[in-house]
Amino acid sequence: MDLAVYFQSHQNSRPAKAGSMATIIDSYRGSEFPNWQVAHICLIGVQEERKAGDNQGCSNGPDVFRKFFYDLQAPDEPISIADLGNIAAGATYDDTMFALRDVCSELIKKEVIPIIIGGSQDLTYAIYQGFEQVEQTVNLVSVDQRLDFGGRDEEFHSQNYLNQIILHQPNYLFNFSNLGHQRFLVERELLDLMGKMYFDVHRLGTVNESILRAEPIIRNADLVSIDIGVVRHSDAPGVSHSGPNGLYGEQLCQIGRFAGMSDKVSVFGLFEYNPELDRREITAQLLAQVAWCFAEGVSHRKNDYPKGPKDDYLKYIVAVPDAKDNITFYKSPRSDRWWMDVPYPAGMKNKYDRHHLVPCTYEDYQRATNEEIPDLWWKTYQKLT
Image (cartoon, rainbow, N blue to C red; front, side, top):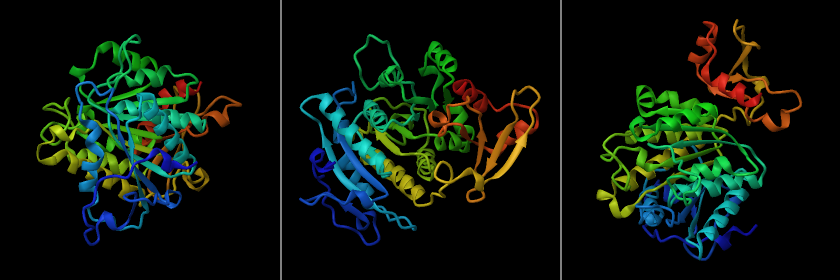
């Protein structure tokens, strides 16, 4: 596929500083399209805001982001990055979604990781459809102060895009998790629905207690979609729906690094940045640093599961009296990270093989040794059976 037909060259023309990201990025700024097939990561701007509601102006975010990303120092470990430029808003909204879907599908097939810079978060639906084209089931993690669901009869937009993903047929969504929601912004009925569907929602206070709790959740994702409004206004003023509470900027950078280090994360998206609202371009700087942390994390991937075989792991079997099966834990000698093995029905190996080994923490192993079934093991077991 000739991806160049979907892109326009970007407008960042700042001279490269010594040792900066600009010196390692193969960038589409003239007539020659980057050799993306040899890259680890591809940067993609999407200039679409027609479903952004009151956040009009977010389509201008990608080039402002580049101004700061290109000036950051390159990571210590070698990594190859191609900047493909921008997918401009099409003649219709569906044209933009079609282009983003096809681009993501091609990159996923080639195992090249896209960093998508929006535009509004409804673009996540097109990325999800890219996984559908390669017939891969998806674990989606959103990082958002709200849960973007709405009534079925509402017109599709950035505040209800999750409806389209969950109701989409054929269904390729295996699990949905949200990090950082604020309880007073989310209806009780919606949280109850998440529980009934065995989805995971983790409120802001839980993440604030320890950012390390986010690591196994992020590690289990195929697609990570971030609404920059999840960050408190003082750290990220460049979005229409930010508030006084939220994640700190450094916490979002840590989430970016968790995503980069995960051998499973295939697409990373940053959405809703609006330069028209961005005081002193603070938010653009934060987005650039989050993307840098993701790239630096990718450079430190350990080829753990699902890239590497679990036969290389240390294996621990825990007998839990109330469980139908023993719980088997695996520990990677490369990274010291932990997983739980959740059994799937006979004959369903091909469908569920990427989802039965669930990232967890050492604390989950300790709970199991104290005869307590980890909550994530139980939810995954319910979905598999």
